Image (cartoon, rainbow, N blue to C red; front, side, top):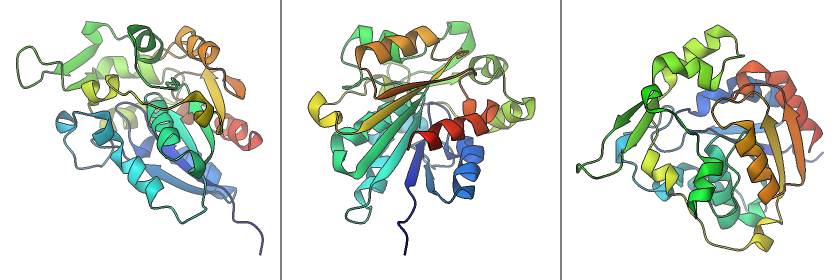
Length: 252
């Protein structure tokens, strides 16, 4: 018997869910790879109300649970998009020996999450107040529990180059994301350990969500094994799925 093909675990970014990967999943499975797409807490069809997700650990639990139940000796390839990069880093800290490679698709790539304001400047989208809807916390001075992109700004921010029908689909499936949980993601550990995992950054050149300057800054501060460039918006899984698939497949 030949070796079983690699197992990919695809991790969505803020406001998205497992659904956003449908084209990439189809392409990967068509080439014989195993693919698992997960919903983080409050994302996709996960039943959790995102307003109740207060810590990154809670937000990320579905990914941690999945990796912890892998058969002994099995390794996965993680692919994170947007804030999903933080989930990938979290998994690298917790399960370094179960991850063979990590891809960051226009994703937040900070070795210890958000430790400083500088980290947040690099790794969090800066969205003008008129483009977002906040759900405020329990008390007046609490930070917002969730943030959502207003409908009329979603296409320009996330998928201005994608087929319009995909933007429509996304607008029907997007959910508010647990802002406080994501912005307080921070991890402890050491670089050495993390560097045992091969990291590949896929930079989206026309990204209006995590802009190219932010992506460059993270790449410069923590250089990955490889930087690949895709001339797309923030959602290459919609706007250039074959190209995204080819970049990933060639880097295995």
